[in-house]
Image 1: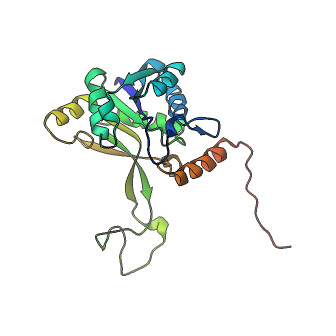
Image 2: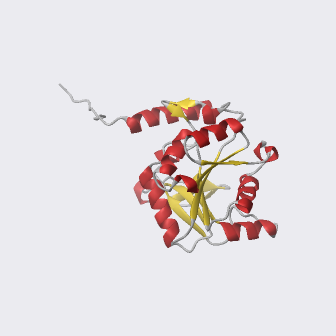
Image 3: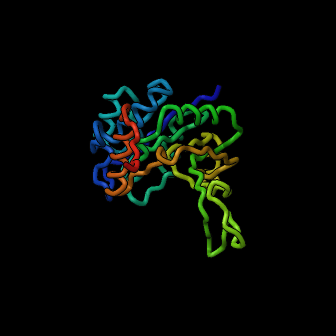
Length: 233
């Protein structure tokens, strides 16, 4: 059995949506969503909020999970995912760290459990969450997944995988070794991909994203929603 810990990265000083991690989304702060989710899957002692902010640390501790206080310089706009993950892993032993992003509040327990099961069964050093897009795609004006000689239905297209960062896992040992060699730890070693539902990949970076997430959370929480249809008289 692999030793897995959850890391929830959170800054207080977000720019496009100010203080979004403590802003209430429908009925609780944004940061509370991944905390509550992770507690359904792993024990609280395996869950860390990684932040520079004492305020976010207080929220973490009040929720019964651990607080890893990162250095201030790792919470600037120029600090990278690799920077703060490396610092975290240097002081928190484990086999794998799973980053659960608070900007994806639609993630479900089923998806996270399936991700962990996939991680347990794979030989990967890195597992990325993806959304499979079945749409005609170009890159540098070249068609990627469809032929220009015929039009086929979208469901018959080969999907293009888009990394969404809602959930990401890294093998601690290989991540740190890659960083110490001056290589990219984020994409290190053997990569595997785990597809998640498109709505759960919702990523809050702007006010527009916030409004969309709010509507999706309300829809997800509604237990009595029944679709209605127009019909001719």
